[in-house]
Length: 99
Image (cartoon, rainbow, N blue to C red):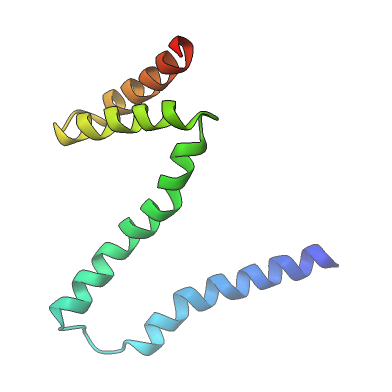
């Protein structure tokens, strides 16, 4: 019975999140500010959920920091994502093995 209640609550919350914007915003949004805020919300939420877990993924915060710095540098130079991910992982692993 409890699992059914959990599933029902999850379905209701998911439905409300999708239904409320459609009912509240019936006209086209003309404000550039609101459009820019709505454009960046997915990126900011994803970053807020992902970034803290990066530092605890290795079990050793200094190795995670070194891997993150390598990833940020490579991303700044517009390297392919696979190169960034593999280089950051290899750097964190090497740091852990050396220290």
